[in-house]
Length: 240
Length: 240
Image (tube, rainbow over all chains, first blue to last red; front, top):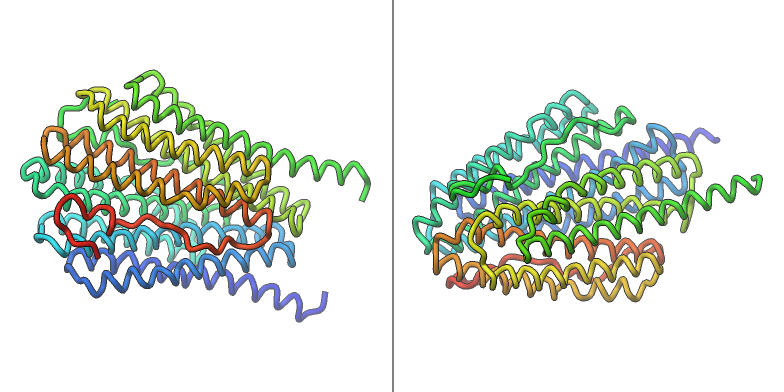
């Protein structure tokens, strides 16, 4: 195989990884901005998040196209194949993360029309910061190909769930206390759920990095959120 | 290439497609059973749905493993490569669909502890039937490789959203009328959201089938659910 072809092949792979990393940076910013826009009731920022989401969709399509092309024309094997497949998987998680950030921003726009609810939005902000941090850590782990950092993110998934459960109870108590807050409260409930799902995508990303580097599936027992423990409270509904 | 190798290769591909189809059948049953368990307050059925979900996770891992192995060892190109990649994608959507069905069943178990709410559970049942039907249709389209049927499913995504929006308003009105129903109401809200997301997965599957058959990306403007129109009601929150 002539040297220039070999080089071009390596370039394509590096380009793919770089594009995933860039997409990750954008997704991370979208989540942080979405949460800020809710916390600060910043309509302009929320609108910007909604508009910017199209870029993530385009990057997702582009990465998938390039990865498929690479598999078809270069027929990578072993670690190159894993790297290519990992790029495809990560692009999916990042695209979904962007959709969730956009949804949070849209709900923020609706909430901005109503009364402020400082304590509740502060709780959303706290949870948002935690989720953004995990997303940042796992994307750092990807950029640096650091498996320990990826595993660390994987291991802290239940912190997000704890935040979600506490927030869920707080919101229900609030809604029960004042039925006029129910509509706004449900938007906040879905925001919290969206943040919890973004946390799940960070966990997926950690698993994909583990697979890319080791060639093994991550076999830890995954801490998946489940409604029983969580949403039983505050009403006396005995958990399953 | 000796004949038996060629044959084995074709067998592997067919086996992969067949396993995806079987996984689809199981996911379809999980959704239908989860909705039935809620409608009939059937605790045994809900528990069965929760337990059976592990099989979908195992099938997902197995399909992915086989697809990667096939790409690495057989280096398929053109339609064979698309078929292999499509199998991987579909397994992801079906695994997520199973998670959502499991979540619905778990919430059903919690609701079964409280007071029945016939009108609301009937609405969930109606939406569940619609979503199950779309899932069945798109899986038929996959088994028969019928692109028109896949596109038909893709085109009816907004029916699910309309159901979701109506149900959302109905639930909020109910919760406002009687704050004691708020906890149960939120479980039903999340069930409705889970069904709406299962509808999205059916739409993803339709797009994947289109790609597998044509080699083109489906470029229709996707009817994505958004909170603005929907969840503005019933409180006077002007849509964005």
